[in-house]
Image 1: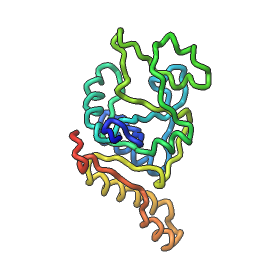
Image 2: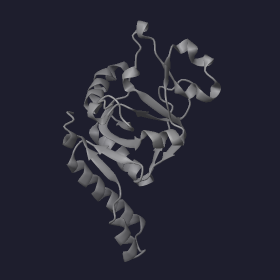
Image 3: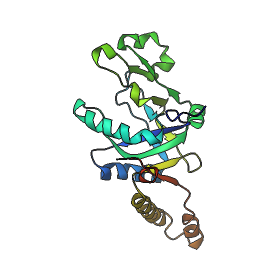
Image 4: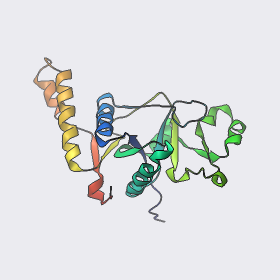
Length: 200
């Protein structure tokens, strides 16, 4: 059965007050080849990297909603991100969160408490639309083999490639032409949301 609300991919959206801020974060992710864990909005202070299993075709709606919720002190996401295969993240230890009342947090075994997300619709607290997954880690190592980078349009693809090439050239300065030849074999994959018809 084919459904447009289910995906075999997971997306980590990048936060920022501006597109430029999120762009710079994505450039740093490419340079370091990793996502750093954080504790924001995670009860218990566990260090995690968070994803959404919402299909990429729905990202426009998610971005619009998070922008509306900014006054609620919720994170504002920009149209940049990292997409990985759901099976791959599961193999690394990633799991869907557990939506439940806040007073049920301590009912969970300690080793899965990082998955708790407060859900109290009677009090207006409902983040289930995020369809969140988490992996408890200080950093998640990425590679072009298991990662697709998300940008709003193709101009950002060219900009990222150029700036990353310049960074790599500086890194191998003086090593020789063989190193520069290797740099030119750019292996990161991109999806431009505008190519998918995602309205931003």
